[in-house]
Image 1 (cartoon, rainbow, N blue to C red):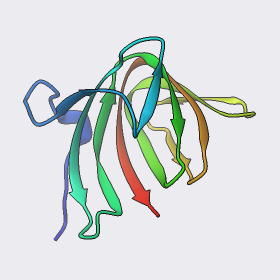
Image 2 (cartoon, one colour):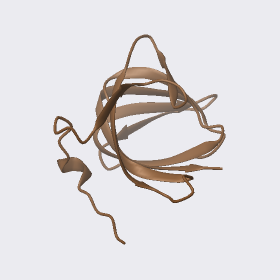
Image 3 (cartoon, rainbow, N blue to C red):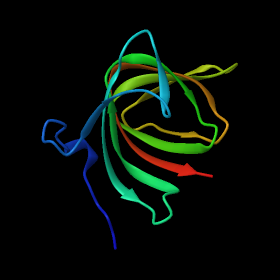
Length: 122
């Protein structure tokens, strides 16, 4: 089975996205609520891999990838990620990033971001 979707064309108002406030176990908002929307397109039979589309409204949050890692590609918007004791990295549409298991730092979404993600668990 091949699963396809066009992340840039999905309409977040269509009802396919599940809206939630950012929070644990994903991340901890720093300075107020952050609204997110997600559409999971694939989950492996053992639940260790998930892939889909995720959106976040602007805000700053703390992320700690202790038992999972994530690979993303930014579809639209902009954010800056900064690993603890690392340099800030600006991510915009077309940029991919890998957050390996053990990555800790902050994400600052400056313009509502939409990303395609693959999360893998240990």
